[in-house]
Length: 179
Image (cartoon, rainbow, N blue to C red; front, side, top):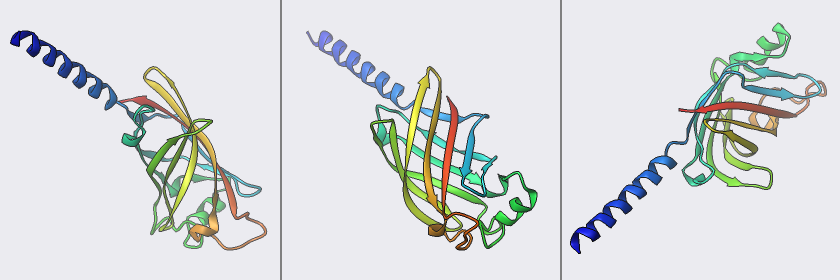
């Protein structure tokens, strides 16, 4: 009888370990083909250097985490002079603050996907924001996409202007594969 109990305990432990191993294997690598766009009346453009660590599991949202960064010097507006100006102290101050950073603190399920709440840091200023995100998985590949808005005055980027709107629309599409 003792052998039978030992067998069932062993089988249960193996099953538990296998389930845990499957759940912790949700680390994603950002692939080429991503897009991080900012859109307004003027300026509009994109950032071409994006990296970070993504651990996401729709079954384990409390264990999921996004730690992302965008290189400010990779800004591309289609106008070389505007790109240089965006990196000056008046705007992003790329010398003192070379990256825009986002670190998640909470992820919840929403009607359309997921809400990723975290700290967005631009030009040394940190603010908590919510980023609505659509997640689509196909085997070992997935995509995170969505749209959110950023008020540049909250981050002391640029000055008040009729030419440059205070609110910028951010659109992202990030393809990933399992590591």
